[in-house]
Each structure stands twice: as C-alpha cells, then as structure tokens.
Image 1 (cartoon, one colour):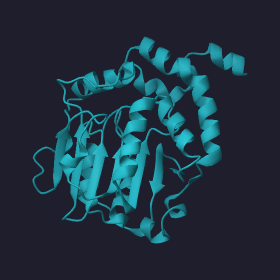
Image 2 (cartoon, rainbow, N blue to C red):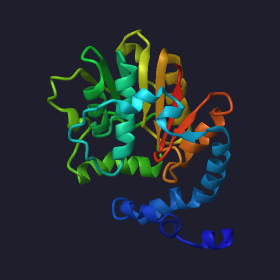
Image 3 (tube, rainbow, N blue to C red):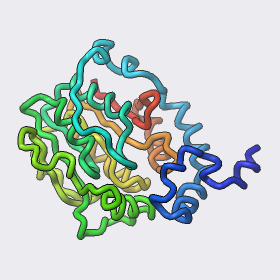
Length: 262
C-alpha cells in the first residue's frame, strides 16, 4: 500500500488539496508537498505521541466553551484559518482577556480582525508582516512565496485589508521580517496571546517560536497554524521536535497547536 501511495500524485493521496489546484502551479505543489509527503507522515506519527489532541476543555476550564464571541467579515480565502479554527481562537481570546496580542503573519488580516473584536477594549493587537517591496532574510519555500506574492491579488485583498479603516479597534500593523524584527518596537510589556502564521519553513518557524516564548506573559498562550498540514510539513516537524520539552496540545478538528502558560 505504501508503495502504491508513492506512485500517486499528491492530489490523489490528499484529495482535499484539490482546492489548491489552479491557485498555484502543479509542479510547485508536487515538488514541495508531494516530495515530502512520506516524511510528513512520519513526522505527524511522531508528533501524535507527544502532542495530545483534544477539545478546548482539555486545556482550559469548561466555561470557556460557554462564552459568546463576535465575528465580522470572517469568510476568508485559501490561506486563512477555517471557521472552526477561528471560533476557537476567538474563544481563547475572550477567556484570556489579553492586554496585548501579537500576530506574526498578517496575510489579509482576517484573523487579526476577529481577535481584536473579542479582546478587551484596552487591548492592543499588533500584527507583523513582510513589506511587499522587501524580500525575507531567509529563503522562503516556493509555495510560501507564491501565496504571499499572488494569492492576495487573486482574491482582491492586501496585507491587513480586512481591518483597514477599523478605527474602532486597537490594531497596529507593523511591517518587517519576523526573522530580524526588533520586537522592542511594540513595547516592553509581555504578550498574552501570540498567533504564529508567517513563513512555514523550519528555520523561520523556529525563530518566530523562540521569540514568542521569550515574549510570552505568565498567563499567555501561543497558537501555531498549519500543524498536521501536509502543505506545510516543517510546521509539524518543528512542533514534534519541541514537544519533547514543551507541553503542547492539538485542538481537535483544526490545524492549531497550542502552548498555554496558565
């Protein structure tokens, strides 16, 4: 069976990837996802041994799931989190009552908007993304490059466009390379919620995550997107590696991994 799978295209092995077809060239998809599918399967099998999967009430008190949340303009496009993921992120924000949120990887700002809508009125949501005219200091994958350079144009969005002109919310857009960014620009106070969804290669994910652990408050939460996602195999590989020393969880029915300081 394993040999048969290797002979299949990535779209046959993972039928849900049909939604990506036509958005990025097939050769990039086969090269960067298909060529690493076997490695990904080994990494996710390893990760499941140290990263337990469960509902929110496995990590937080049961009352978290009883809260109401607010969402606006939440139907994103390819590359955004799913609605279930978005609801769980918002529930966590509502429960933690953060004073400060950091998102590493703005994309179109859809998730940024929802987090800010559910944060206390005095919370500042900082979101960081690479300026369009500047290349990343570390080489990005071809797929990440394609998503960042072409997808927003395809869907008629731009960096942070979902929260553009939302002067009722305390969202501050920062432009820079997360691998080299000086986080003192967002103040010296520790951060209560950090959402990591920028470059998906191993080295960038490692740099973003190590920085997040340094910035995290005593009650803080770090969320990673694209765990258990064959399109971003290095995310699962990295989280599997650190889960031997850090207590991580996987939120069931999502591609979200979480670390909670509480």
